[in-house]
Image (cartoon, rainbow, N blue to C red; front, side, top):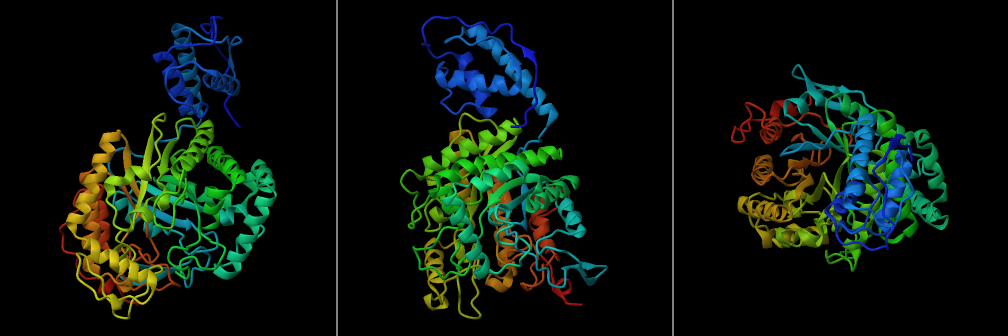
Length: 555
């Protein structure tokens, strides 16, 4: 690890030599918490001096270059106090050398950039569609989800401060085996990535472990770090998120797997079932943070992973799944904090960030069944994704298929079962009819989550939610109404949100979605609501939404 070496003398650290035993001590508890937050101690913060505490302190002293005498079994409370002061001084010096900025406190509405979500999204069609001086313009870009200067102006006007940016692990780990410059082709790339993951497992990830020594040479990582730099230079805090994409069987995002037999993406299958990958993954994350550190990109935080599984097909956590994922997060967060000791962390719920768990209509008061707990760590936010009911949050933008002309409304309006033409849509309509979503539905959901957060003294946020564009089933008026209710309820309960779709089927434009054209003609009514969430002067959640005919005209 690349750590600042500090030569500090801890003269007060003279330990007593009586037998190894200790009653809980508040000073020892404070030291354990400091070591936990610095990434060195993974045990309970209970104030008990034990072998784990001693070993963690020894590692910390070694890495930080603190000069100290040989440790005897048990220190006195006063001696621990001296150690605490030295440890705090060392951490402060390390933070001064790499002063990461915290995830903004309080409520906010952020956005998500899919710039490197799938490494193989290169096709930008004719360019980025935007309007300048009342005319349609296509701005040259190299990647489909690449931002343009017009976006920065619009986001800043809406008070956006946080940009969640995923990095597709498939293309990052196997950029040379599966040609990261190849345009998205589910069949070809699924087969290649499936083979690459299988080979890496057989080789215990030895090739990828060796890659960590020269991660700066990885062209995907280099491009991703450049993207962080782009957002930071324009004033945005970047949430780094390791992410899945390919499943290895050609079915991702097309709904071809039978209901209840869906296959986990390759990245998540490795996280769940490959012990060697579970050890490698925290090392990779630490080196990714180290690349940001090498560039002094300080306005960052880390979300553990996008939509971890550890879930049964019925949407309930697998046996021991929450514990297993929590342990992986502990290792990941520790590795990252050893690089950046005050890095803001975002812990993610299992069962696809809660999506699978809540998709059948379960109440949000049961969120504790899928949410990890890290009481020993400071500056941790806990993340969920909001896609339920899917009939209005997803509509036909992903797997569900509906009869031509089907319109799905918010608030709820009854639809015949025959409107659904595949199993995914039939399930979504069933839940839609069961929940009958309205303003009251989301008011209760956010109130339940707010109560849970207060009872645990934690901070919750939704790192993904969105509403589909009109040509995927939800009329623009209903879409605006849904986003307005979500922002109002989340704001009332102090639960920050990230609007996920920027340019895709849930994009900020309400114009007709055309897959080959990334549409940057953002709906002013949506941007006004985001501005309202961010307390921008002049924003009004009840303002007339106006027409977008002129904005969406192809001339």
